[in-house]
Length: 365
Ligand SMILES: *Cc1c(COP(=O)(O)O)cnc(C)c1O
Image (cartoon, rainbow, N blue to C red; front, side):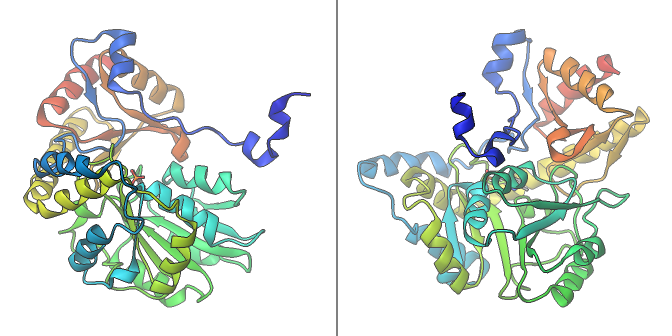
């Protein structure tokens, strides 16, 4: 007998999540003269200066368990979105919240429906719970097909998942499309709006305000990992009806997120200037990258997020370019696990990193 066979089949058949390479791994493997980490949609500017002081302060109480509902942070978050405190659930990143949702919402046999080109974390967390993910083909413009999602709903559907803006495509569903979903979604189906990149979409005119325009069956996810630059701290939150939050709290690991994470997020929230600067840097970087790709007649998807999806001729070409870039210190992500193997996702980094990307990319074409 192989001990592996003691594990349920739905776990054995899962594909493990493969994160982008760390700076250290690339340093050890290739010793490039410079490294630009453009593979994981992090904020390349770092985080607010206020975070460091706050985290040092948090050290005074790290022998105590964290506040299970992160009271102080919850209050700030609820005020920043003008919702009730009881409508906020805070956990160790939005991936943890996706896991909580997968452990809470579904009866056996109920499935989730989404696009075939979206956040791989959903596929992993649903798979771990044995929840079937029905994938509706993305539109020609690499967006969620709202009609397709609505048409795909049947008596076994428990939730619809939309990342808005989407990862890895950087596209979004508009206010009109969102309204169509609200108008047509059955009352007994949840809509999970994963807004990990919402800060970057703030001034996009027809971007839907899902937190404001919300029904009882809608769950909105936000994170401190992207624009706030706190990916290493693991803090994310959900905004939902308080009857839902009450149930989710029972399933959440009691003491997530950590005390350090709670303090860090609280400080980061107070520094909206840092967010503005981050968003501005991404916008400028995106524009320059479009210009560069246009100049080289490359195919890409226009993004409102902090990454741009480059479309290659084949998955082989995408793989070759990803590896060539890597050897020279530019870490990007081929998006096979997200359902788009012929594409590469490039996070918009600092101006210096983007110059580095262009310089190396030229040698890889
Ligand atoms: C990065 C990302 C997440 C994960 O965020 P964490 O809060 O770090 O777990 C969730 N959803 C989407 C769409 C993402 O791109």
